Length: 454
Image (cartoon, rainbow, N blue to C red; front, side, top):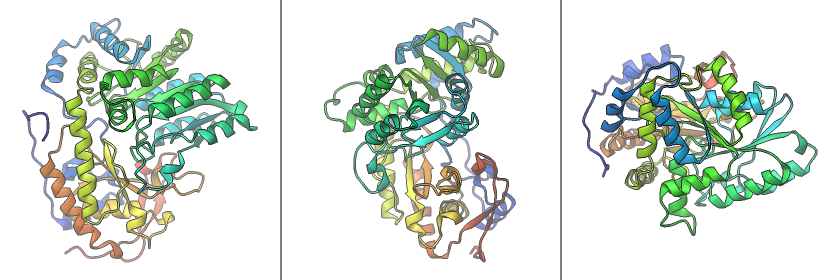
């Protein structure tokens, strides 16, 4: 059961299928354009959607809203230092702000970044600097049904080949996303991180973590990696941070809050230059675009998120949800991670080619069927350079401490209904615009005759 009880509730909207079809048409079939008030169960993202604890809500009253040198920053800074071991802590309003600042400081035009998988904003921030983002997922990641415990790992052989080859001198940074969101929420092992550190030290390349889901990755290491059992999540998380030269994190995930993040670094000079960019883009270094009350909520959230009971519940929920969806006929990625279940829309809808976005077809059908909002993680979101994504996925994210098992059982029933109509679904085409992160703003039109809603 959930290791918490609920103090505040809000009503859930229930619309008719006809109304939801109208909403989809008006939104140009882009689920990001649908209003939250028109969604029954919102599994779009786990980012910023957390239900905060009573201790976090109480901490808001401690917020020091001074422009410079606020005591709330001091508490946040000390909490982050204790957790990560990094001496330089820079607050930011969310993860992509950290990407922009770090990459602007570390990368030059024409360089390369290598990653287990670049997330959408990570790739966009690399490419906006006229650099190239190279994904090097481990071989096991190619098989969605493979039960390997650490399918978020980077391919070490390909990383060595890249560094030893003609492009090796262009490598500006290695990025490890923990857990690997673009790769299906799969964890990265400590053994893989240690090997990456050895490679980076040999060639003098900085190793950076996207640590947005550091606690969930630490829990999965304890559960799956030999020799790590019995350790606490905070101990394992600290080991992960100790292997890196720096990191950034959107704390809208494992900060258990609704906004905020940090950049954490070892090098004082690099941190000083990052703070100069922070002042220009985000705010003074002791608030970084955040209110004092946000910093207080984050400091408390960083203490709560490594609770073993919470993390065990989180992983168990994802595993049960994946099993239930599979029993309902939806192909899902195995093994389940923590923050989401990823469905294989390409396998469910083989008659829709990647260029016609089968993931979008499934996302729209789930909303039409029952008001369940999910998100496409296939060619619309992760395709680039006219190449399809490795897999046509749909992510069913799990907001932290928001939905109970009863809510998720409703989702499973809805999925069963949608799966029964899979052969009727058609693909989509983009009618505009084609922005770098097009999935947020694209207008889409269904191909072929749409079905009538009964």
